[in-house]
Image 1 (cartoon, rainbow, N blue to C red):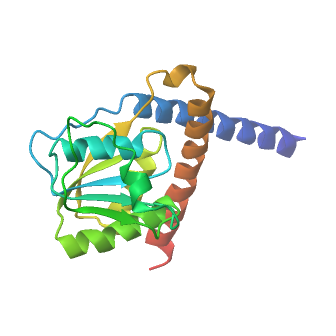
Image 2: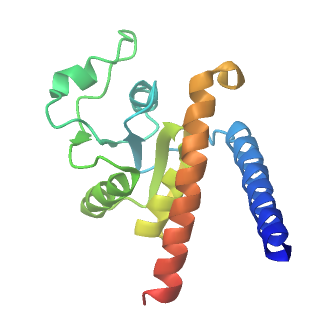
Amino acid sequence: MFKSKFLKFLLLFVFLIWIVGYGFFIAKVLRFEIDIPTAETDAIIVLTGGKNRINTGLELFADGKAPKLLITGVHPKSPDADILSMWKDENKPLPDCCITLGREATTTIENAIEAKGWIDQNNVKVITLVTSDYHMPRALKEFWNVIPTLRILPYPVSKEDNLLSTSFWYLSFSEYNKNLFRDAVLYIEKNFMK
């Protein structure tokens, strides 16, 4: 009897901690401030997968916020022209040079690994990282895990109607749980697998 009550209490306690954690995660996502580069960074890195990510990265690149652009996670069969055709602003042409499309990554971890190779080749020290607001916490975690010395200016892409969008709640809930899982994996790797 006592064990059963204790187990129920423990499960309720864990559930409450998990829900409160989700609330903090949402608050962090919604309060993400865009650190608009006042000076050039070495590069802009865009993670594909969410609405407006690529176009936002192209806009920053066209505005001269960095001399190089990496779009990581591009589908292997997507022609370069399809990606670049997303840019529609004829008054602000894209620079002729230095857009790289990375086609190896299919996950956030692989985005960071693919970016590391490109960063090392291009001697990049400071980047503007473009991804969705709900995805930014995990993206930062993965990039800093793979490249701990990299300076990152987060540039989260968000929809104005986030709180009214069911897709935002679905994606943020999924991201929250992926973050918890990655926290656990990274903790185990750093503390028990040395």
